[in-house]
Length: 325
Image (cartoon, rainbow, N blue to C red):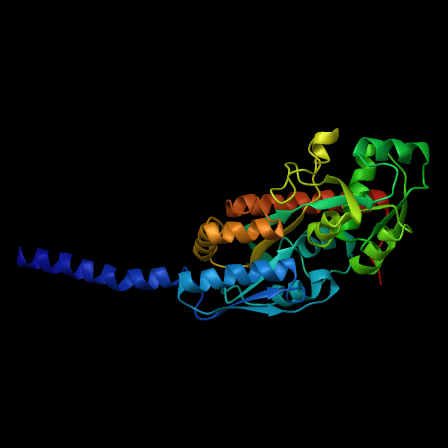
């Protein structure tokens, strides 16, 4: 009996010694860096810092954000793709780096599927179809009718050839069977100036840029590109509800790490990000930046990214879009 008690006690002690080590394997060994491919203060950066602050408290280790801007997030993605899969370096992936670039850049320095470990979808924001306040077509059906009546003459701007805003336009052109004149700009700021000045008639633009102009009456909103109306723009109808079911062209963000991260670590991070996204103060901040529909399983995010890559690759091929530079 004594020997049996000794063996049982020894087994329990062994389990007690092993369990902390097993738990420790669920988290990275040391500080975590979240790399953001855009400047500080933008939507991607805001979401990364919000998550980093909460996860740092939850994990009991420092979680810092590093901004490595350039090439619409591609430079940051290339950096993270080269890191070890120990969880110490993560990336706030973006529709540009992990949705559009794989189909747009033939010499991309990474594989969006092979070189990363999907962790969690953080959120989607719609692009908004907007027009100058004095433009004649003030609803989506009227705009489609105008474009069909004047093929190739209605001027749509974008923030750049191959940008998320440009791809939203191309997807809509294909669905609506319209022909328009596309004028790419180097960023949203000069585009908005020309839209308000009447040099460009319509465009798809991100919510952060478009919302203040809509609120001030300088531009009008005709549609938004999530399948359901955004909580931040409840009065703007979706493209889907105006005759194009299933239409979606969101700007999205998600957490990924380098390839070969331990499955247990990926699962732990996924569950903890879900917990953070459900917090009341985080929900409030997400509404402010227009991000929603985040969370869910690792597989949900992996499937979503794969579908996005296929959608954009087809659009890029069909529209014969060539990367700038």
